[in-house]
Image (cartoon, rainbow, N blue to C red; front, side, top):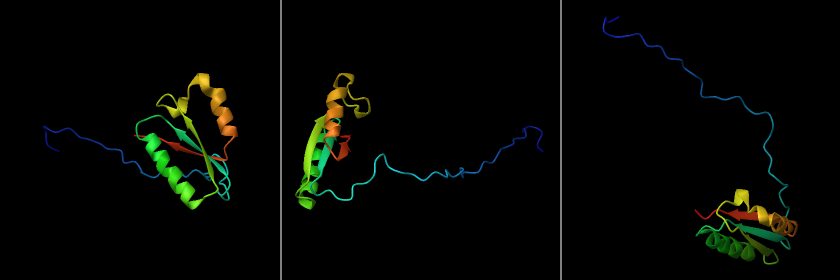
Length: 106
């Protein structure tokens, strides 16, 4: 060993994590069809969000002509913390739709 150098040691870790034995699943079961269903379009109120939902609605109507849409516009940018004073309004909107597409307009 050189007299001016200090010894260094390194711990080598495996990049592999333990596998989670629980299979992934969605928040709700996937719909078997969209024809005749009411699809909720959730807008987070950022600049591009309404444009994204316009495009999604156009594609939905083209592929599923009998599908209907209903929009909910958040007044703030954070969809995850929808306005506390609008919880009832939001929950009522949710009850009236079969599925939701959320748009984040960044």
